[in-house]
Length: 210
Length: 359
Image 1 (cartoon, chains in turn red, yellow):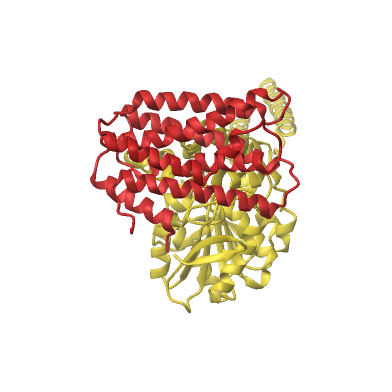
Image 2 (cartoon, chains in turn cyan, brown):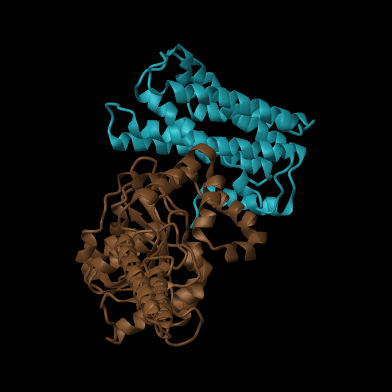
């Protein structure tokens, strides 16, 4: 029996097997991904206060600029909707993400190697691992539109960034147990999965009870 | 698909076929999932076997732990799933990465191993294989999953298969990219970084073992399977013509024929684990399923036969020259030539020593 997130993906796959991506769908997806990318980049601005020798510096520095690059690329590639309600609903979803993921806690004070930092790394990992649009599209759908080629580039880059994220999650030395680390990772995955499911429901117009 | 709980993780498995039939468990290769066994499942079930397939942790529909991954857990997970489905003994077959799990299962759980069928696999990582694994890992993490699949394509399949399926390869790649979580595969792969040779350990395997190696497998070449043949006393090595690494995808029906024949031999007490080497009959449905392999199968070129033929021809030519002798001076010349030829032969024989059994 698939879980709620898997069920939603199946419903979205079914939707896209019968429907193309229109400007409303592209707009909703772009606003969500841009919110994630700009949020992550905002947190990562703090990285520039860290010394070069700090072990995570180089990979997080790279991630910071990649997030900005990909967000602006998507901005250029999207066929934006003229429907104001799409933007209003997208804002509500983005606010939900901020609240559920408690993003405000990562915005304050410089980075230090503690549970908050670990929690941020887990959230960033979840962003890259859980938010995947291509798997819900039919494998026969051409990816040569500006929007889909940008999405493809984002998801490929996420795949590359994840490896640095995993290394840090596995290797970082913290006075917390393995169980606690797993708990943090699972919590962040659940939060991002839930918001991504909401996005799919909005994009595919799937009623909540499904 | 039923779920088996392994600690806090979920392992997805599925069984097919009659409950009282002999069980064959298939262990996936690195970037496989249970669906890849489907053509073999249908074939083997219709031949009267029960088939168990499952996704290892990090693969397909099973949990993809970010932190808690240990290669050694894989054999234990399989043993626990067999308990779950009330199976005391099973034939365990695995391909590539899954072949290592099958071998480990063979010596860690001898009481549960009715037979082992390692396919296209390895027991240690030699120089070439380490670089192949390193390149795949870099391809996956630095370029992307699509490139990783492209790197695997010529290792897994022959040109004939690739040409025949060229119209669906991009499509199946998209499905693979959609189905796989990159970090799950990456984690499974990184378990190999700490892989320690199991060559000595596999000598503990006592159950019937059929080792399968593709003729054109350049990923895990012949010498890797020869190690298994030499180490496992109750084994046979079968060479499968004209296929590369992923033979279970390239020729599923022929693989089923070989596996079914092996199981029938074991079940009817006709199995002879005599460490011999065989060549599979590539014609589906023909008998015998395999014939004994003659010659040096570790070489890709028929060097011994060629050398023998060459010497025979030289000797025959020298004898031909020596026969029609009538004058005394000619006899001296022929004898000198023969002596010179003999010297050349001796020199060649000493300089063309048989190389080590590696490619």
